Image (tube, rainbow, N blue to C red; front, side, top):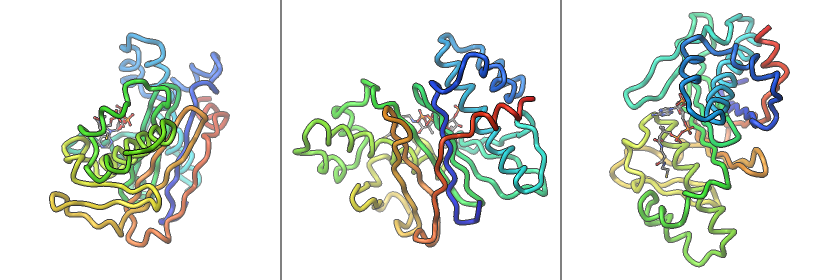
Length: 247
Ligand SMILES: CC(C)(COP(=O)(O)OP(=O)(O)OC[C@H]1O[C@@H](n2cnc3c(N)ncnc32)[C@H](O)[C@@H]1OP(=O)(O)O)[C@@H](O)C(=O)NCCC(=O)NCCS
């Protein structure tokens, strides 16, 4: 990857066969395996295990492409003031910055070199993401764009705003400490605007919307001083390569 790349990899849980799970789980350090074991529902164990195996495995594969050998379970993360994990890098490693997202049936990771990056995925059959939430979570300018749409277009816009807003707050690492109404997207063209509560420059952001599976949407936010130069490297994860890391 280059300094301008936003790399995105996703892993659908449905692609993981039963015998694969032990290999993926082996990519996690003992404390994360233990954390995963505490989930009550198998699907939560799967989602967490797939996401963290994807994050750790992707970092190891990228490091290896730079001639550096780091086992997936060896990566350590520091946690920012609002909870954003970033890798603690060995001296010779490229300046990886990462973000992770998981939802029912899908995990995704985004990686950049020395740039803020955020990713969010949502499951389209999620029933609690409805138009009633718009007033609470979206900016007035976003709510206005939902008026008069037919049901399909409304749902598409709703999920787009939701994932894009998450991608931005995750890129800057602030989470819900940032007022969600203080920034507003337009979808076509894809752009952001900030009100006076957020000191940020719309011209320094690169956003993308993707459809990794029929049932999921993904949004990406990358801070880049010249967004036209940013490039997207987006693909399904190489599951076989991830599993080889466990052997
Ligand atoms: C915690 C939050 C950063 C993301 O939550 P989320 O969308 O439910 O979860 P995702 O699966 O996309 O992301 C979780 C991952 O993001 C990372 N993360 C945690 N805090 C983060 C932060 N402050 N910034 C960036 N990434 C963060 C972690 O890797 C976490 O994975 P883990 O819990 O398995 O370690 C925050 O945005 C939140 O609480 N959102 C709740 C939903 C909401 O109200 N959204 C409004 C949208 S309009």
